Image (cartoon, one colour):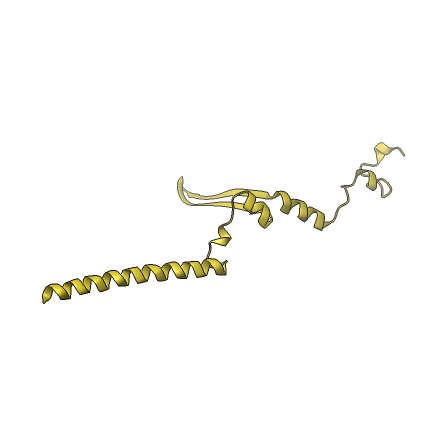
Length: 115
């Protein structure tokens, strides 16, 4: 029998043709270091009328790689960051105080004009 008769390599030949050895940790480190983008669109039409379009964009990377790419939305989302939640509450508090001062000023002017 010749090598042509065997379409697949035998166990002794798999080291020559197999994928390079590496662990899952090495692969994950490489992906997180460089980042990976997965994009796709889902479109639902009925009788040539577009009913729904969903655009999916997935960016998998480490925090440092994402920040280098200009992506840092988790730092300003109150649901994900306690600092952002405190900042949002402080801003809302300042706005409410300003509105209250404006209303008290308006009431004071109305009371003064009625006298």
